[in-house]
Image 1: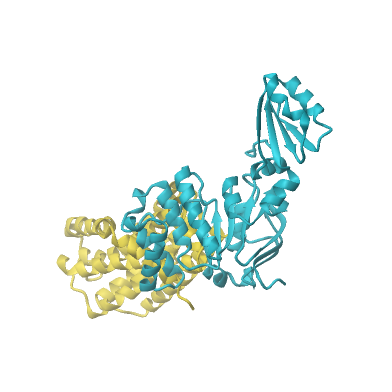
Image 2: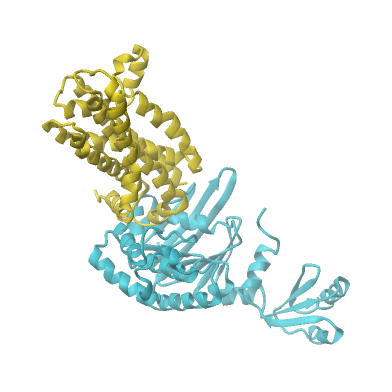
Length: 307
Length: 251
């Protein structure tokens, strides 16, 4: 067993009714590492997090956090874990600073110590001037920052972030990323879920893509993109018949193609001369570096998931 | 024993302290109005019962009803708001506080609110010409246990509820009949023996009897049975509430 692993999940599964929300997934997170769980809605990300916290009881497999078996040591595990949940569940009956101090009390942190930590965290998340404000008067970005600050009140050895910037404007998102990067640089072990590929690319050392409760792929972001997608992507828009011709014409190159009818995606692993002249024929052509989003869509498909 | 349920209690107390006045008036208005309307109004026309004026007869029972309503409402509307609307429970469960700590904290908190309402009622009794005996000092213990029973009962409803309307069953089918038929307003021997026995199997009549006995210093052997019933109900209801809440929260 790996001494340095903060989280070790092996063969964990969970069924709700007759649907397997998670079917046998395994992963581990090393100390100081940031692992991202990616996947479409309903892929099993939140269920996996809830199993780590004992909010959902697995139907099989084993979970160890800080080297402790989860089923028998939930209190100890949660004592060292900070969670920023997907839904805003700040306490609307309390002010900003009361939220932090009250939350600290659930960890057995005394009021004096809690106030000191709350002051530091509010400073770090640029909320110092809001400390006596009621929650209703905070903006969406401020609430999110407070949720993250609250999750750090116990100085967690494992920091779990479930879609930490969902629904925020770019300014608010970038501020949060900057703070999370600082935490990461300080050696905090993180488990992140997100729909924002940019967020994952910025923060995560390693990514696991889940689909329908299974691990589809796992690895370092840049390596996975290079191996499974390529270096560059060319997107061509035009009439269907013309796209079909192009798709056939590039078959000799080291590429893969994908079409959704009105748009052709050509994923390039090497150079391909035949693509270079396309712009001259009245087609709309965009050439850009391959990214995590391409990988995600290649692996989980382009159709919507809300059945 | 890490007593984490007390942290849940503290959180609720802190939130409640912010609107204490509205909360107390809301909880105490009804029993005081009953005491005035029935005790003074109707009571004038009614002969003494067991050597007590009608107002003296109903006053200890209305103390019990104040506790019952406060505890039950806190553990239904209050707890359900924290469960479903504010997601406070979800936030708490991400900390070392377990679902069992949470359930116990909610029950004890509801009981505390019930106790407070009851104590204020008792303290106000001299204003209505009811002079309590020294035994009255034991009434808060009875009220706290009664508060546990009805807070736990309320929390059972919360654990089963899918919306606020669900609590109408609880108030109309359980609390109101208990309020009317548990010997607050008339002695139970006025009822058919079968009905009377049915009431005796439920907790509120025992609280009413204990309160009346303690208030007027007339304790008898039947009060031991009542005390036992109240303790048993408090334990069983609390255990039931905590386990149902666990089932609601942990999937």
